[in-house]
Length: 379
Ligand SMILES: Cc1cc2nc3c(=O)[nH]c(=O)nc-3n(C[C@H](O)[C@H](O)[C@H](O)COP(=O)(O)OP(=O)(O)OC[C@H]3O[C@@H](n4cnc5c(N)ncnc54)[C@H](O)[C@@H]3O)c2cc1C
Image 1: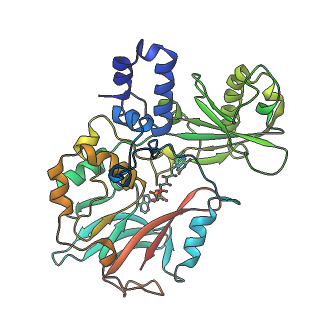
Image 2: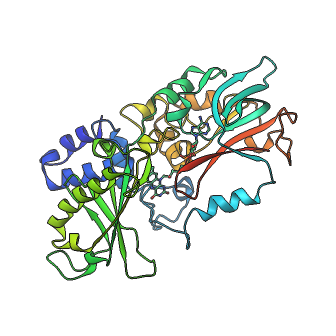
Image 3: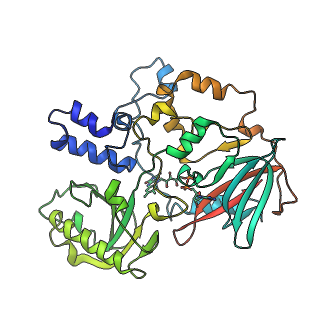
């Protein structure tokens, strides 16, 4: 059942009521796909309180429950980007290779594998014992993995897993106008959900020094996918379209904050991951039927090939575990192969394919220009 159908069936008055539209907008906004495509379990898990396994086992029933994935938000002072950069700089020099695109995975009979990359200097083949694939399934499905030995359920997950189409349009203002007096709620936390095309916005400058303000316009579903910028990450100086998108947004914002346009500084930027050939979407979103078809299977290893990334995340798997057929898990996790930390690997200080038969990790990191660049790390 889809989120939309769930709202129609269980909310008195259905989608046409303010509550119905609020639930619809929240679920579309959080998971990124239109609600007719999403599994209704996304909605149930988002708003329903749930216990972790520890909490379930605890005898003290008075302890508060977690509320789905909505756990609040944290930011690193100075920018979250510092974290991947710090991780990158802590790795042995030379073990990361930028601009290497994985194009094929082939397993040999002795279980070694060949990973093929296109690189600025041509095709590179790397032989290794183990690989950890952290690229999203939205792009893995375009890699040639026919000779990787993936079972059919894994192939189904790779091919069919839903991906949201969330975009972020950033608008700068000379002041955080939304906190001033006006015909809008005086006390607000800078987070706004609307039933207009602009969908949701928040104050991206909260906690920053300076007198300016920034709103992030967060759109999802068809609306988030509808942009057509010249590149996935662009500013108004690079593209006239961005200024037009900002003006369209301001026009609607005027209905909430009359007079706000006068405070727009003319600076805007758009992040459109759906148009990024290395993402092809925002993040994973289970479609109707996918919890029971393969939910939780995304992270299950296939011989020497391991999977990681948000599409394999534990809270997603925890939700799915309840629903996915038990035997599916028994079949795949009760393997006699060791856990990931027992992977035999050969740390290498300098990248060279003569260090064959090691573990190859494809990992990634936000680059300074906010576009994503590939880092490949062999350890
Ligand atoms: C618009 C938007 C808003 C978000 N907001 C939040 C938020 O507020 N809070 C939060 O916690 N999370 C948020 N997220 C989610 C967060 O960004 C992701 O969950 C996180 O980045 C996932 O990390 P990852 O390493 O699994 O994948 P990604 O960060 O998506 O990295 C995947 C990498 O794989 C690389 N890649 C793809 N194909 C290939 C290939 N063939 N060969 C080699 N490399 C390849 C890509 O270049 C990319 O760098 C948001 C995401 C989006 C898109």
